[in-house]
Image (spheres, rainbow, N blue to C red):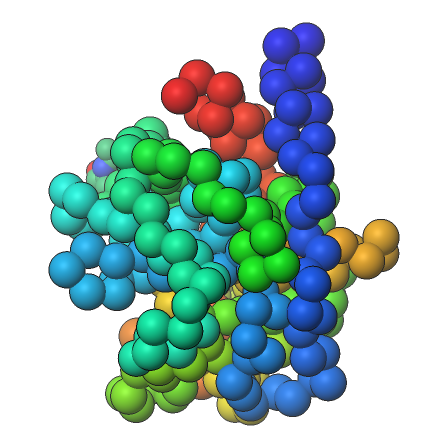
Length: 262
Ligand SMILES: *[C@@H]1O[C@H](CO)[C@@H](O)[C@H](O)[C@H]1NC(C)=O
């Protein structure tokens, strides 16, 4: 217990998290929009032969993503990416050295939860005005109903639509567990280790698997509260089917121990 506490302090002490040099547009456009360049400086692109998923920088040499994103043997992480089609200059491309998938992840059952993985980078990212880790939430902390969070990524703009080349963002208000787990919503697929957000017909589906759900805390810092996990099979704009995220606040001890041991 004491060790866990020390480790936890070590993680939260990563200086300068969650304070973008280029503040994101938070004008509450519900349908998605292009993000202000570099306003989500913890957003990474996870690439194998091609971009496959999003992820979040949580320390100079650690990225958090979804377990279901890890299907190949080798990956690299691109930081300070905005337009995928252009080399804009500030990008940093780092090889992934170790991939640690949550031991309870079951790839036959995404709705069982534990859809989280940590990637140790071969080198530390150079932190600057365009690259900065997100803050991790406190263990067990939760978000109130309708808390405004943002999903980001290069994912499809709407179900079946084309991939975006420029980073997109969309406001996704949190749907509290008691609502999300109602039988006409996600029912038993909504676990307390997940965060539900969005889910009305206005919500866009920007975002990629593995990418962050970023929420600004009362202290002004941005916290990565969710890892994009799954959407309804009928599409990402289905009513009463919010996007499902792995709830980062449920995995802080595992994250701390994994980073300390590797
Ligand atoms: C994984 O999920 C599948 C489908 O729900 C289930 O049949 C299987 O027993 C699970 N495996 C483990 C190790 O829990």
